[in-house]
Length: 288
Image (cartoon, rainbow, N blue to C red):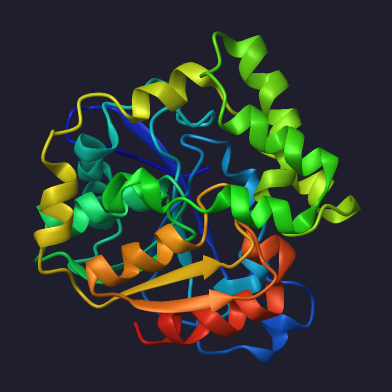
């Protein structure tokens, strides 16, 4: 696995997702990605093992994706310095790849680091694509509508997942692991064998997750909302119980972003609605 040396001397892993990672048949049909500069991809979790990304429904057949393995992710290890500071690592990855300006794609918690990069390094980020971002930190917790979405599903497993999500924070790794199993249905608009299997992929450590939110400027949300961002697209699932749907709509509006809604989809669109996900993202990747 390739790596690079960050400016503070830390060795950080990444991997390059290319058209050879696309499903059989897709790569053979796609030639646009050959010779294209990679977009940078920031996974979520926070600091979840990147295997949960799978092949992103073959999106790298359009353009290579250099996937950052953030501090705290198992293959990089260590601890995050907080997503605001760790934005430096994305720029250091761009430098290691010889990229002056970059398109950044991010999922879930990784969207915070992506936004921090665009705010702190406005001359380096050309375009942002933010997939199912947590949004209440930017638009207010009162906008959260996950309970309303859950009620429409009328499923005891979903109700149990929501009760856990809205309950007290986990107290240790064992509690974190137990809660992760219980909360699995909240990540998806359906809960079939496919989603059950996907929910288990990617190691995740409570201490690493907590470190991601350490030492964030008190005015970070205000700075995000006031910044002149590059062209930005937000991809939302209308059945996303984890972050809700209404908050993501408000988040896109506050950022002045284009909003693309995937119907019947939760938090992991490449796993649930791969064709719809590709329809939403392919032109953004090709634009680079």
